[in-house]
Length: 96
Ligand code: SF4
Image (tube, protein in one colour):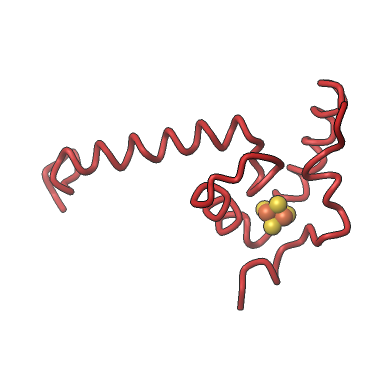
């Protein structure tokens, strides 16, 4: 089964996850908080976030993260992978 079939957001609340043009910073903050609260109870949050990161989705709330938070998460993951690769796949104790 596709993970989207288990998403709690559904299509009817897209405005909550993407927001309208001309939204003020305060409106955006309130809307994003509401969207993130929905994501917090979603059983496919991890899959949703992985999808957005893998496909470089730029807009909206995905997996409980907004655009800026996903950018930081992508950086964090790439640094973790780079660090792991530079140790030849070994952890800090030299173990695989
Ligand atoms: S994590 Fe959030 S945006 Fe992703 S499927 Fe679940 S409710 Fe929807």
